[in-house]
Length: 437
Image (cartoon, rainbow, N blue to C red; front, side, top):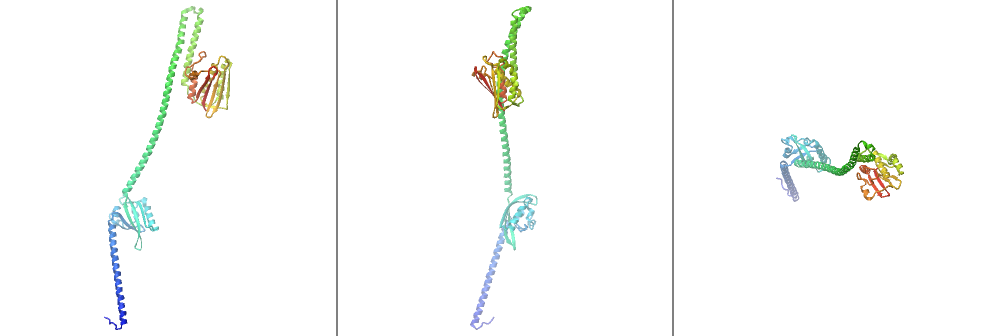
């Protein structure tokens, strides 16, 4: 034991040194205690981390910047269907990436280690060694360790949700396809309904035409039977009368009268047969190939045929055509229409004056209008209403069959045109034809 100096100042120095040494010992003891406590706390945190890491139901792993797996919990091992951690540690996570999703891990690598993002999340597919696949939500955060930076990654199996989403997407696609198919069916049904509507309208038109035809046939049968019965009965009586006169018939003064009456009956029979022929034409000759025809040329073709009638009646035909109107019509039908109207104008002339037939034609937009005007007998309002009926005749003293105007009306209507009449008794008649151009 060192001796204690007797000098008071020396004693104070020793005491001071001892105090400083004691304080240093105390500080060292406190520092050691702090280190011990820090070590204890670190150990406790490690125990807690490993407990959570090892027992979490979610997959946890630690990867490096090279994407090698440094550590993994049992949940990751089970998630990937591996026999144990040894089959996973040290391997790159790309070994388990789906070929179509390897770029996802490259994106994670760039986000964390190249751009130093603190965290990154993605949804990707992984492949197990047995070939099965699963969808995972991956969340990675950076943390410093061993003088570098590692990634702490959580894997959550989201396959059920993905399968549900895929099922919903497939259902939506199927529904969209079904809606498209239903739309197509509705459009087809609409088209079929339209076709049915058109067919019904055509059927109604055909029925109306059939009703009209039946009525015309009834009229025809009645008129034909009536007109044929009378001349045949007359002929029968006249032949019987000649037979009764015997060989002396040649010298009988009544024979010429009987022969004349027989000729008249034959003429009436011929007229009735003409009516039959005209009716057949009216019913069965409505069609015809259409051409673009000049109205002027058609009138010039008719002029020679009506010239004898005009010459015999001392009449004339005046034609005034504005421009060069053309119509889309059957050549023979246009000839028949013009010939009928002009010849009728001469046949039904007024007894007190020579006939003058004026034909004017001009174009109006998409149609051609032709007026045939005469200075003949004219028609009353009631006669005008019946003028286009079959076998309708208003002047018995003029030879005719009552089919001409009916035929003209049918031809013009069938071609989509119009035929109108304006007349005044004693002053003449104007027929107006409207042709599709």
